Length: 206
View 1 (cartoon, rainbow, N blue to C red):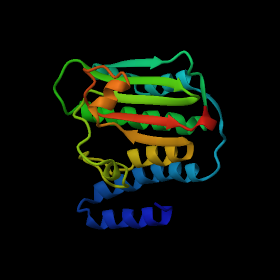
View 2: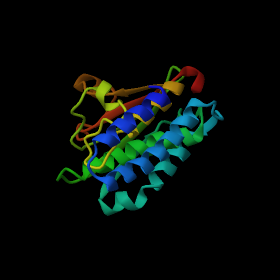
View 3: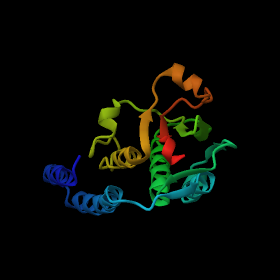
View 4: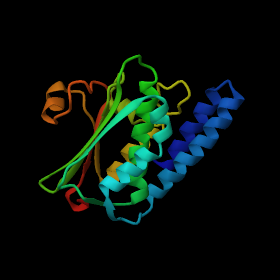
């Protein structure tokens, strides 16, 4: 979606809103996200990014939230996974958006333990990152989930997964896993039965 169309959709959403406070919140949140989108559309500074270090930095940014909610995190970076060639800011932004999404939806379920799972592998020079949790999972088609302003969060405006998809279009592809057979093939533990996504980086990014 072009940025011009994004703003047109945003104005439409605001016109339909009945709360001025909510409008102001949407304006500020949209401003932050669209600044990131604009940066993505420009040529970024693609350099080798240390996958493990960047993943850990993204999780450390949520250390307090994860601890307060007693969400356990399992991070498994394969020995053959060292770097991906991309903009480090974009890489960390993608992981942080996925963590934030998981935290929100894990807050809506009553189960112990609450878990977030990340696994990175390299096969045939293709780096793949699996990100999953044991929350309620996705209830909508992927085309809806990555559409701007589509959100089932009570206070969300639906930009997070759109931004993730936009960034991954630059470096590879973003997939949502719903097939149990594929989940098994990916080696995802059976207790991780919520939302599952896959970030696949192009060969020239590995």
